[in-house]
Image 1 (cartoon, rainbow, N blue to C red):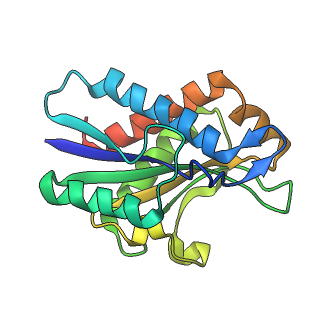
Image 2 (image 1 turned 60 degrees about the vertical axis):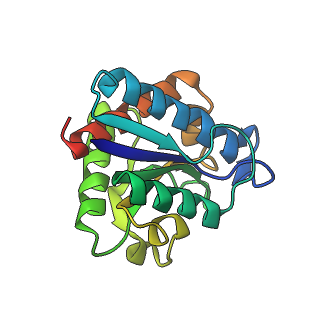
Length: 193
């Protein structure tokens, strides 16, 4: 049985990054729903596949609660991967690109990050930031979603809503569908579908 957890970052009173018409919590939910939908379209026919969500709407859920839900699911149904969907922001409006973060020393986290990055790169729908994946140590800070969960965990930053090119993509339903499929294919490659 392959069990996955999808997390749509922020929500409720925590909007995340906001720039113009782009509100991160909304984009996280819309993009995450595309990942979820494609996971079921691509792999849902398998009875050995299950996806859990930490939230399915626009409401508050603390990082501690998210980690608790993931760890509880992992205790009952061993989780192959927990993935959190986010969009990035920066003071430098030229900063752009897709990247995935994982915990240093997590070989499964690294494998998942590489598989997702490779799928997104092959899709050609958005530039990668650097090589497309890095450890939280390389980022220079710990990420609660990654470091407070028991199963392998990655955090995807789809693009920078502060960058005009990335923001235009983020606000496009077609882009969110395409990136959702690319992420889902990468997850499938990681788990061996």
